[in-house]
Image 1 (cartoon, rainbow, N blue to C red):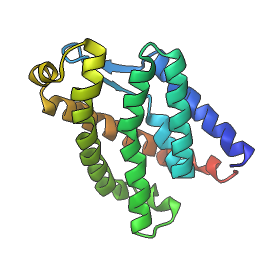
Image 2 (image 1 turned 90 degrees about the vertical axis):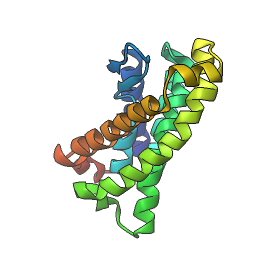
Image 3 (image 1 turned 30 degrees about the horizontal axis):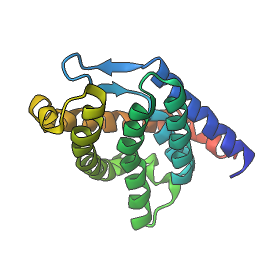
Image 4 (image 1 turned 135 degrees about the horizontal axis):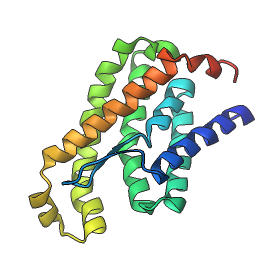
Length: 185
């Protein structure tokens, strides 16, 4: 990595951490789940510089969240694990089709990988919520968590979050032309 790319990665990770610390988003009063913009900058990193940059930004962002945000390591680990399928699927889809990085500049090209990423994300986060996050966060057993929080609520919140992360990142990078700054690195 060159110094400019490392600097941009640190900036995007900082944006992620700041949005977690001030918790910019919506929290469901009944379920306690958040729809936020924390991982939005992680997907921006993917659209600008690819999977490697997205990995670095997400890892740095999760580390900063672990150290400074009220949700500490639990929130950071859940956000990282839930978002990883998004940029990973975007990358794998691009590789399978043998497309160049600008492939996603066409908005319709994000639909199939977004759908696949939502399915993979849900297959990961639904059991992870029941057996990891909810028991640690609330002290409930996994059985109690399953009876109180239906699986489809977790699916819906995570699907909305995935759409927000990818679509808003796409808008910022391609519609607002942030992509032009990626070329200088």
